[in-house]
Image: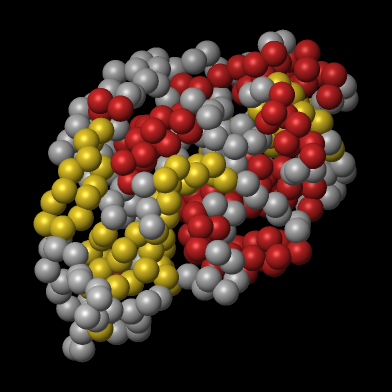
Length: 346
């Protein structure tokens, strides 16, 4: 097995990496005190492994659940260990056939500057199709979530009225644009504050925008969709889900992709009127994006074309440097981001 490196007279391979570890488990909303920036030695590479210098990492709402030590669909983060999440980076050492030094890969060992990874744990990405950071957003799991939600979980049909919560976020902004591309007659987005609702209309092509912070969510939705809605993509839970069930028409479809309004709570928020959903023959279906990984490659091909031709437009909120990753994560939980929340590492 040959070893490829980028070592030259001017390049010295790292012996250590900085990483963000879970310092304590939160009760309620997390704070900066729950994270620790730690420097630790890098492991020696074995055959079949690569060393990646991370350039971008993602922070996502689902990570809040992994901070708790309780059973879920994904294992909790461990105290005193690095957090995990989607990242992209450059291969600087390779002991793996088929993965060249200098190539760009995506993986799930974010929250650190360098990562030693098995070749099977990374996916090479084509940066001629789109810039690397798009593989954490529109071409990443957030984009795939929006696509799967609206093509399988709660399929959008031509002529539908579609309601999107967290519409100025990473999933919601892509979902709204895809709904239009799939033939929806009207797409309504909910976001927090006038700047975000204006962005939905001016940048992402939504037909109507609701400012949930202005109050009377039900009244605002009724004004935007007086005849009701056919499809609802739920990333919020709580009041948004209750209002959507009240507004949905017979045989409507609801995709349950998140519930950020309750991530910091000790108990679940009141649910929707399920009797009303039943009598209207409404489908409420949850989804995990990893169930759709078999179509990831197919989706990336389509989404790259949509980015190129303007079907999908994106915006990002970017924090600079690993030390800012906790602040970025806390920001996404509070709705401080517009579009995808990213951390640029180098």
